[in-house]
Image 1 (tube, rainbow over the protein chains, first blue to last red):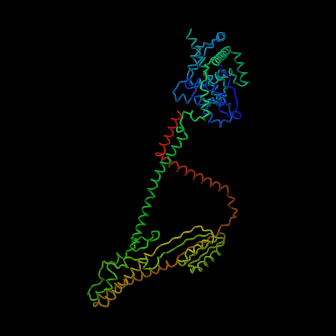
Image 2 (image 1 turned 90 degrees about the horizontal axis):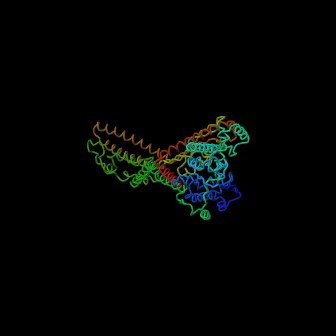
Image 3 (image 1 turned 60 degrees about the horizontal axis):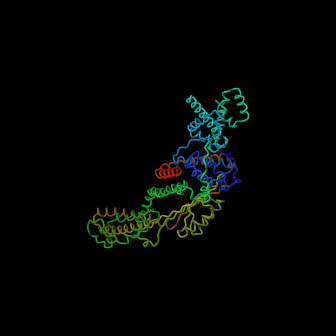
Length: 174
Length: 411
């Protein structure tokens, strides 16, 4: 399970990039892997921390360190995707084999998997940041560099699309 | 619909307290909304809990790259950095501009320079031929030896022989192509010194005009000069002014000018010098020739037998004598001007600094200053734009190349 991203420090407390990397590498790596795929994830994560190292003096603590790092990672992912011309991998769900839970829900996992794959990249970004990385609307807005209202609207439309795909699937199954 | 848009935010607990209460009330009343909320929560939970969790790798590599300052880890070579590319682009533009600009500038400048060089060469060659180069090109060397062309038929040598006394009917001196050296190549050596008409236009601002005026007059006397004219204007309500024309000996000209400058604050200062050496030489040579011709006509007159001959020789003699008078007057005038330099001195009273009415219009002054500044800035910007546009074939390709390199490097 994705652990909640905690704000481990502001610019005033942490200035050692090595310590920052140890603290946040996993979060950044996972974010990158979901955005550009496993093959390019390590390179992208490394570029993220190298960029952060150069820009660390400019970090004023306006946002949390993790949000700041994910913002850099977001840019690095875009650059990497453009450079390698790679498509973002689909948002995969991993079967937890928890049969009890499965019964609790009315959602078909296979259908959801397909619905997630159909999302546009903008909608994938917000779903990833909010649902998977656990960022608030405001933090997601900071990472993407868009207003909070945009995050809210994108999430609403992403979930509307997911629900529509699910209902289409159910109708098709009948 | 707003309500449905807010539903996701409501599920995520991202709405204000007031909105939350409103949405809750609506959900309670609408079973369809209740089902939607449940579905949203379930999707959200499944995505959150079952999202694929990649296994992080490469932390050590990243730490190594960070500890080496990112120098070897950065896959982008330094020379592909945008800053470097911009620097290279700018350098290219400057170099090309530095090559191209003088070419344009030269086209105007070279014409001036060529004219100056040819003028100085001409002066050099005429100097070798015995002329003194004139100051500031006032006197063209090519136009100086006019006497040689005008009087080709008379020369000193001819008159010395003067053989044609009883020649019977020969009215003019015999032609001779050979010019005596002294006449053909007038030299400063003939006159001893170089003759130059020096003039100074001085405008000086002084505290007390009458005092300065008398000082100027005493300066002129001190250097054995004289005051040619002196006028002053001291009307009520206007600043006092005075105009003086001073004549001083050539030798004391610099001293006089320097002393006059020290009377007050020099507003304008214009010194000119006109070399009249060749003019004087020219006039004197012509004079010599004319006198010789006069002598010859006198001889002819003595030898004349017929009334017709006497009359025609006398008429010609009159013309020659008239010309001699005129040349002599010119020579005297030139020598007089050259022997004494002229100083035109304008004295004006310094305006009193405490003039309160200037402060009353400060707003107007500021306004006009600002407007003038704005229009000047506009003109400067306009000029710059025109220059940029005209020079765009030079800088545009370089800028576009740099931009393309930056884009490629960032990709």
